[in-house]
Image (cartoon, rainbow, N blue to C red; front, side):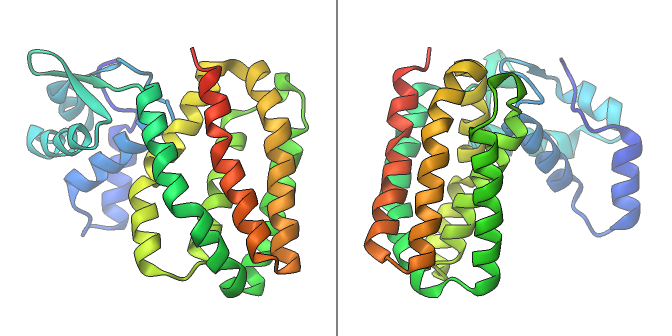
Length: 238
């Protein structure tokens, strides 16, 4: 594939609704989302000229967007100047695991004290949704459900810590964490992943129960165990 999944009419509508949008930012965000959620498969070619032509714009904002994606590590130079979509490697996953280990457990312990009643309601809903996904059959497993609900669950807990510096650090990881979740689905396949998710659903329920009881140490422990489960997934990653 040589172009983006956004089409000209979608771009025109977006710009008409908000004429102050920076074009390069719009192109970047569209391609970023497509890559993170694997709507553009790994090694897909990204042809600057073709993307610009399909969207009816100059090459300059496309070039700027692709340059940012390359700095993010989401695209790479395949041959010469040709760019292609990157794939998350095991090494990338291990680095993410280490970053999460340093951050999420402590953030969760703060969140127990600072979480609002509205956030607790949202956490309960996300817990129920995730448990339902984890207890379903692998034939029904949808990567969007699994990845997005898990992502929102952990993001909510970090947000509830109410620490802007922790949140800023976590935000810098968020896209990569979502990318990891999608890559995990496609690397392991639904059958292997469903076995892992069965235990993950129980951990999410335990985390919510500990939040409800206000048990700070248990919340931190369960969140750290949930993060640690990434290692189990890596052992089965081809």
